[in-house]
Amino acid sequence: MTIILALLIGGAFGFALDRVGATNPNVIVGMLSLRTLHLMKTILLAIGTASVLMFVGQMAGLVEVGNMSVKAAYGGVFLGGILLGLGWAVSGFCPGTGLAAAATGRWDGLVFAGGGLAGAAAFMLTYPWFEGTFLMEEVAGGKATIGAVPGTDYPALIPSLPGDVIGIALGLVFIAVALALPDRLSGSRASAVPAE
Amino acid sequence: MTLSWKTGGVLLGLVFFLAVALVKPIGVSTQFVIFDGILWNAVDTSIVVEAVTSKTGFSSPNAYLDKSGGSYAKAVANPVNYGFVFVVAILIGAAVSGWLRGSFREANRFMPQVWLANFGETPGLRFAAAFFGGFLVLYGARLAGGCTSGHMMSGIMQSAVSGYIFAAGAFLAAIPTAMLLYPREV
View 1 (tube, chains in turn brown, yellow):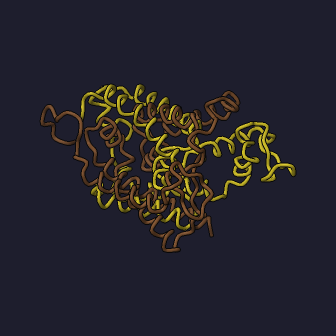
View 2 (spheres, rainbow over the protein chains, first blue to last red; view 1 turned 30 degrees about the vertical axis):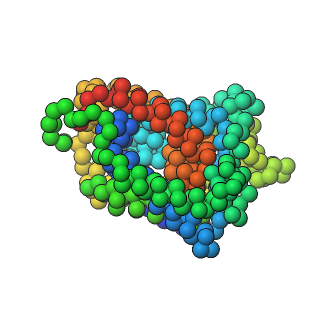
View 3 (cartoon, one colour; view 1 turned 30 degrees about the horizontal axis):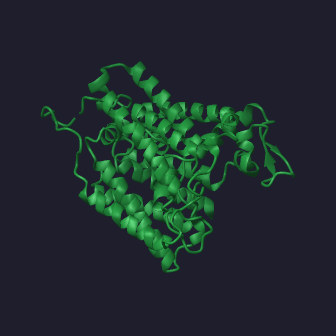
C-alpha cells in the first residue's frame, strides 16, 4: 500500500514541479536574482496552504500527528544550506527539480543529477570529517518546532506557544506574503526584449 | 504552459499536505545516497551486509550508510521502499507532464535562455556548471540532512526550526550568486 502511495504522491509531485515551472532553470535563476518572483509566490502559497491544511486537519483529528517528521537543527544545516544555495544558483536546479527536469528531456538536468550522485558519494566518504564536530551538534533544541505541537515529543523553540495554532498562523502569513509580493523586486527591465 | 502562481501554489501545497496526511513529509536528497549505495553495492557486495546486531538488520562499513542503525544500508538492500519509489515516481510524473507540453520536441534542451544571454553558446561550460552545481547541491543537502523539499518546503510547513535555518543559508548564498552570475535577464 505504501508503495502505491509512493507512486501516486511522487507522480503528482513530479507533475506539479514541472507545471509550476520549477524544472526550467530560467525560472529558478529569475527567482534567485529576484527578477521574476512567480515561482517564489507559488512556493510561498504552497507552504502556506500545506501548513494550514495539516494543522487544521490535526486539530480536527483528521490528520495523524505522528506522520510529522521534524529534522534536527545543527550547524551543518546552515553550512549545507549555503553550499546548496551556491550550487542551486550556478546550475538552476535543486535535487527534486533537477531530476524532474532530466525526466522532461533536459540534458543539463541529467548532468546535474550525475553531479548530484558524485556530490552525495563524496559526502558518504567524507562524513567522518564532520561526525563528532561542533557542526553536527544540535542547536535551538534539535528537532524543534516553533510552538509545542500537541501529540508530539518535539521540543518547542517557544514552549508557551500552541504549535498547531502557530502553524496555522504562520501558514496564513506565508499566504499573505505570497499575495503581497510583487512580481519583481530587483531593478527594472532595461530593454524591452520580447520573452522568448 | 506554466500554471498561474495561485493554481500552481495550491496544487503543490495539496501534494505536500497529502504526503504528510497519508504517509510522511516529502524528501528527495536522501535517495541520491541510496542510489549511490545500490551502485556501490553492485560492484562491491560487502558494502551492505545483513547484521543481527544492528537495529534495522543491516550494516555497512561506510559510516554514513551505517548511521541510525543502518537505515540507509537497509534501504540500499531493499530499494522497493517508500522513499526510493517516491523519487522514481517523480521522474514518471515529470515525464508525463513534459510529454503533454511537448518538452521532448524542444530543440534546445541543455542551454537555458538565461545562460545564453550571460555566457553565450558554450555547451561545455553549461554542462560543467550543471555538474559542479549538482555536486555542491547534493553535498550541501547531505550535510544539512535535507534539501529544498525536505528542509525548506516540508520543514517550514511543519514549523520546524531547522527548515528556517536551512532556508536562511540557502537564500543567503543563492541570491547574490545568481545576481552576480546572471546580470543579464531574459
